[in-house]
Image 1 (cartoon, rainbow, N blue to C red):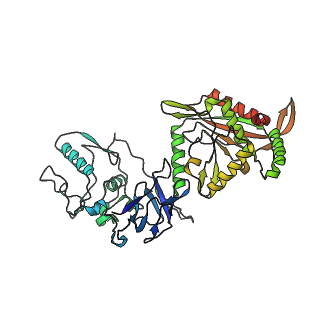
Image 2: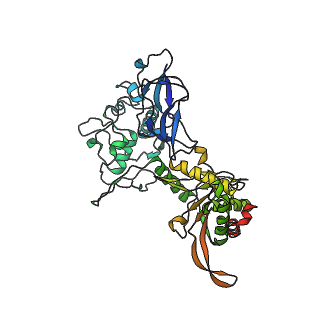
Image 3: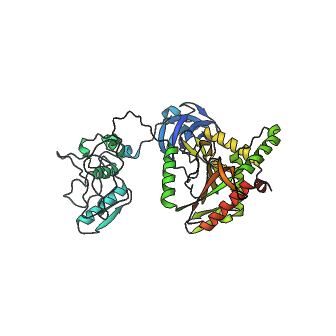
Length: 460
């Protein structure tokens, strides 16, 4: 019996990934610990290590395949004494069923209900058909299609199934629903599924007529974004897993987290002076502190002084942390990642600097492990190096706050009742107002400002 290799969950939140590269080929002898493939998650490219031994008999998912669900069988390994050449790829559910499979029928005059698309009807589909027949006979007035989330009623218009010549169109239920909503005539669409079945992917780029509203509460459905139709020279690029995740998480954050923003102006002169002195002392150890290293330490220390901001909102619970793990926003090719400096409140500046450089370097190479970028109690995002004066950052749930750092610049500033020139930056805290009150957020901003302007306090 061959051993099934399944798409692994390389992080607690991973649902799918891209099988980037196979590092072995069919016929190779596999030993436990061998690196078999590289798998691209939403944040990094990680190595897939073998735990079983034998001969790689079949590769079922080729390199470069996107959106491979966790748990999908991607390869087969022949055990000792098993002939690898005789192992065949398992048949899909659709191929395993007989072509003449029929759904259960309740009436003799419904020929359409007697025919399912070449055995591809599932138990769930049979249940739906049974419920629909109940409606036709005066039974339940409403039901819910649990598989597609589509509400239907007795008066809802079902998408047309047969063609004009009486031949049934073979299409998945999801493809039928999309066709109905977008006004697409399925009779003119070629199917790429088993036995010519029309699936969702076949409808991409197909133009339809007027959109039809779903039967739920009579409200118009939101039409999907149309493909760009322009004569302007351009090129298109498929979204990476990372970009898809960024889009999803930021949309969720702005839609579900009520943000409150608090901004303070902070003098940097004392911090810059201390940084110069520390770098001179650390030169023999080849450690060079950045301004951001000191700001990470300042935020961590401020969270300890304002613990009501070192929290996460969790539905009917509020999680308070006794340690400050700071997520640091790092720009990498194709997106953004937030490696974590754990326990930044108790680490020295030299340790923070060394750790940030290591994390940022491996982040840009896609070599971070999930625990190095998932979690954290608060975040910091510094765009000062780009000359950005101030900005409002989006909270990274389930964290309760993020600090946005602007550029330090020479500004007129009142010092000891006289107008002078000082190096000043603007810092804006974004807070989850469900978990953090405005007064508590203000306390954190006050503590952060005090530590940056009197930096020796963060070294105590």
